[in-house]
Length: 222
Image 1: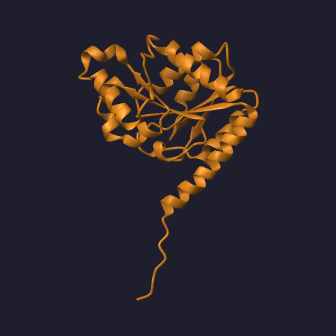
Image 2: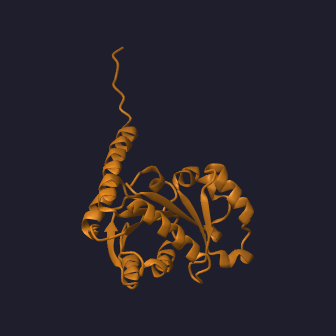
């Protein structure tokens, strides 16, 4: 029986993407621009969190935001209201951004005069975790209504994240959400990862998150 060559398409695609991502990071390092990839499920409060963080940082840093969605420009318009540079990226139905798409966004927003660019990835706990965008750091948001078991169900997302933001802590009394348990579950997936409980709407915990990001940008740009 003749042999048939088998090609692992996913592996090849990821290898090509990883190479592109490394090239993006080299570019960002040369330009002294920090790129944060922000991931979460839909409705976790990514845009609201960004608005709160922008208001903490915009007097200290030049900021640009890339909003990725399958369609619409709702989030980019919200971000534009803060006064920082923002663009909307449409993925054409794809549930994530890869390094090539991110690089196109960086070209469009213009990074030469920006200290910090945040990519708000498509709302999804699976696909975005698989593709390196070329970001310097990955952040993910878990909101209280989603439940404290998400690190058990979506391990890769928590493994690739460099920081976890637990949003909507103002509604903790109304949900069966155990803060100690979720931290235990997160650290099981990613030992030692930093966790910031916040309420993006009231601002609780946001200054601490902004301080973390300010330090990361400073370290990258030095």
